[in-house]
Image (cartoon, rainbow, N blue to C red; front, side, top):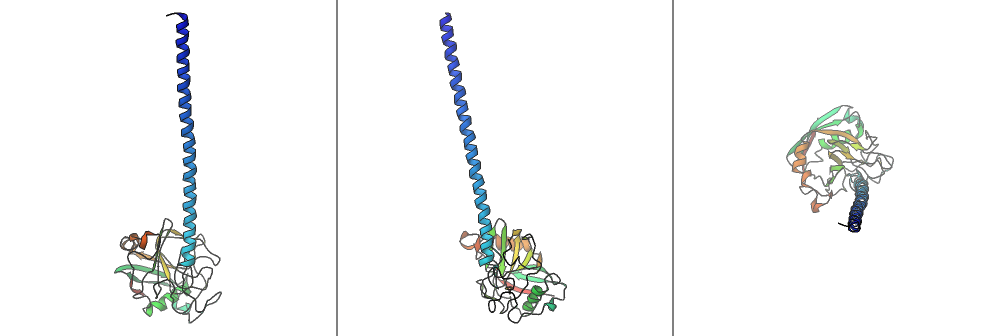
Length: 268
């Protein structure tokens, strides 16, 4: 082979190697840009999801568990109207907080035939526990339904205690203050707490919520939600038979698919 042909061949091979290198570089750059884009999209999705979770919680306890004296929402609120609208003071015939006797009260809350062991702390939440004791002695909760369920990743609450079954009912009185609320807004699975009106520390009534999975509820202008006690047994059964069935219509906040009815509620 002549020197000229040899040089042409080497030049051609060099060009081919350059084109191959440039092609690999182009693919590498494209892949790198796509990864950056995907990371940005993924980050944006996480931010949106977190924002929606916060909005849901704020909404729940502002319109659900968090409105007036009867139930908790994406904030733990109730929509029951205090008697009359109470702000800063008790209204109506509120049971004496001495009833709780500053001791632990145990009992059974039976929902759809599922017995839940209950323990209420009369020392840490004397006013709210006294109200619950007074109401259970009157069989106030028997036959009522738990009207609201939330199924968010960090917001798992079943709201009960409304005699009207729609979040607007109460016992005919409203009371405060907020007792035994967690400073960090974290409510562990099994917690039982009072629902109240958003921004109103004296709007507790008969509505309460059962936390069936670790939940975070941001404090509102009034603070947190009165923790009165906990479920000591039966929570897993409540989850499999009721809360795991979800919300009507497939949402994450509303009436449960399986309507939870309180058969009885006893304390001693």
